[in-house]
Amino acid sequence: MNKKLLTIFLITILVLSVIISGCTQNEQAPEPEQAPEPEQALEPSDEPTASGNGDAKEFPFDKLTVVIPYGAGGTNDRQARALAPYIEKTLGVRVEIENRSGGGTTVGYHSHKDSDPADGSYIMFGHHTSFCKQVVAGEYEYEEFDSLGSMSTGHPVIMVNPKHNDIKDFKEFLELVEANPNEYSQPVGAGWSAVFDIILNENDLTTRAVPVDGGSDDRVMFMAGDVDYYVSDYESNVAILDPSDYRVLAVLSEVSPYSDQFTIANDVMNELGYSTFPNMATARYFQVKSEFKDEYPLRFEYLSEKLMEAGKDPNFQQLMEEAGYVFDPKSPEEVEDVLYEYYESILEYKDAF
Image 1 (cartoon, rainbow, N blue to C red):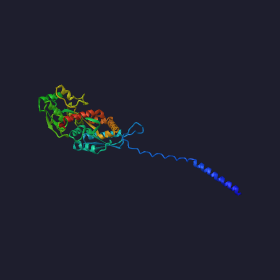
Image 2 (spheres, helix red, strand yellow):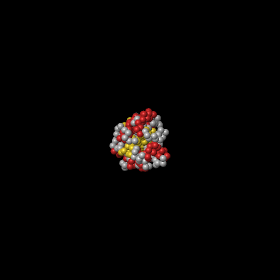
Image 3 (cartoon, rainbow, N blue to C red):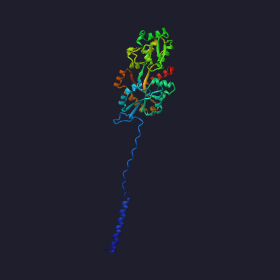
Image 4 (cartoon, rainbow, N blue to C red):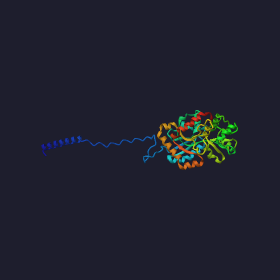
């Protein structure tokens, strides 16, 4: 190849290279696929979460601890342990009972208030009268704890031992007391029995009060025939005593479920022109420190619903009926005013407690 042809060939190659290079530079390389954003870690829900079917809810813990501010074997302890399997069924988690006795229930309440988490994993099963007694004593404020709903209610009644069957009914009892001052005796400890004695004295009806320290001394004294009459929760006595061993003269509460079974004491008091009794009733109920309701209102509502559902289980209801207890579970909304009314009565007669 001559020099002229070689030069033309090289120039052609150079031109073609420049053209190809320009085209390549003008083409935009395909952008790489954008990496997916890393998934955000899910924060624990502040409220019960929806499960697979979209309508059921779940409790966010694998265990619920129920604190009993009494020792093992008492009424609250027995009721809570009997109820625990039914709560497990409705709530879907294990239920553990923890006794924290001492200080007239203050150990349990203070430990719950000061140490237990405010997330619903720990709740109390308390006795309303005992709780109010400690509020009156200044241990804590009524508003520092919220009710999750009441379970069983105790209704004090006035009873006479069959040895004293000369007393026909409550009206005749009052007439006999009026006619025979200081003759009829009753065991009087702190609580509704002392309030009963105060009301009688306000009406110039004088009985003989035999002081007792509490526990079962009053019941033993009554059953031995050492006193003429006795004021105590009907439910507690039915669960322990043979009903044929005593006779109920009247129930000391106008909100009693026994209105068709026993005389309402205030009906007779009104008939005879005496001042009446406050509504003498108390409740065993679930409580929790108020921070839980404030911080987790939906979880509070959900837990309350499940506790009520457990208490209404037909098998549990039958179990309690056989034991002599009246279980009538009510939501916080249903019992809030009633419980506060009992508290105001205790506050009015605080010296009796």
